[in-house]
Image (cartoon, rainbow over all chains, first blue to last red; front, side, top):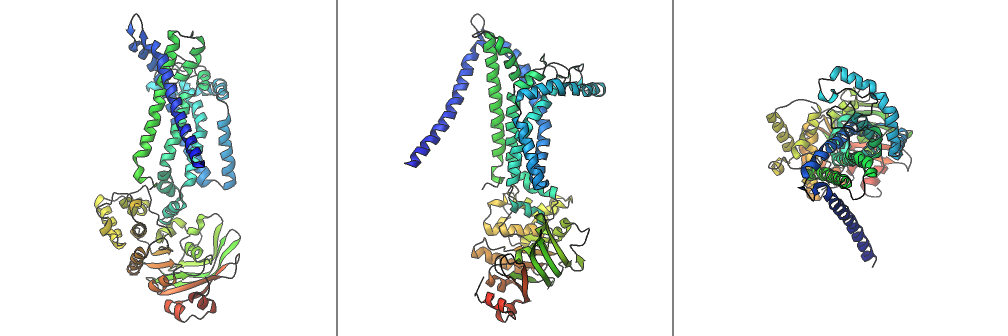
Length: 297
Length: 259
């Protein structure tokens, strides 16, 4: 009896998730029709893509900057907590990192806009002066610091706690047996980590990074506040670029219900949905590719 | 290769807790020495202090001297990492690296030295180490398969091959057969007899018949009570320990009256 109730509940929960997913997908697709079809002109996919691709690229750039900055730091901090710090210290560092996750994103946005941006202005000036032959640092540097790079840094700080805590959990679970196997062969602490800890934690690190990427892709408030949006530009240090969530957040209140503009915003939301889906599936694929060697068997 | 081990008044501590007290022992090169005794008597702790593996736990330290031939492995300035490269260890449960293939497992310790080697050199090392561990014929066609896919006994021999590949002076074995079936156990015991030609071997075992089968010398450890330090009670030729022990406790233990 109890078994039946439980299996029923589990099934229900599973179905509920699928149903939500289908509902969201159907809602997004149905409401985005207006963005790609006009009665008098027929399909206008080309126009929509013209509108969407700068936003897609902007979103990816901001998230990529965030990942590149956050991942090494997060892995390093997690490793310090799990394998290097004395037990008391490691606990308090863990708490501080978790606190970072508790800060509302609007606060991060305000901090990025009023503090981090202006602070980074001299750096942008320097980068432009010395490295302007690289397209990334070519355009005229922003005087407010409200650039895609600043947004990326803010996102990095925001996703740091997620990646750190996932990595820490996995690092701690590394079997003692394998750590000792490495040490007994004459490995230094770092060699032990590369031989036993990292291979064991590989899948966990990837899923932590993907969780972080998911948050970075979807982050609205912080980016909307930090970035002064504009046209797509390769330069990271001048004003311009925008991301999908920021575009939706800034544009939606002004779009009349049922209008083509609203359909456009929903359609771009659908695009973000698909990107996130691809990211997650890629992560799963990477994780499962080396299943045989994962130690799960 | 292969060195003798001498402990002089060795005390092993975990923090303030004295785990093993006053061990004096001389272990000859190219011999098999068994440590027997009831659970918690400090035999594993003492074994792990022979390659400084007990220092994995914070606060672990020793007093006294532990000589490998004539070099004190606890002398100031001695790096535990270099000690462990000389004194290899095989653990209770087989622990090949799960993410590595059989071949990579054998080469794992070798690669730590950072020595660049050609493919053919590496092949040679893999083959000789696996032959040395009596595993070559069973795995030669699947060297690129994961080591974790082998049976328990094969995994343990893979771990021995991995240890042998770095050419240690001494091999420590911490109950290497306790997780294995009788046939695999026999294979490991045969292997120990062969390895003895080249290495000094110290084995901790709960199985007294095993100690009698594989070792020339046996040390009996015992503990006076919980919370008290473990001590080495008697150390002699294996036949003496089992047939004609001089100590009452040893006699009671080997005749199965306790433990």
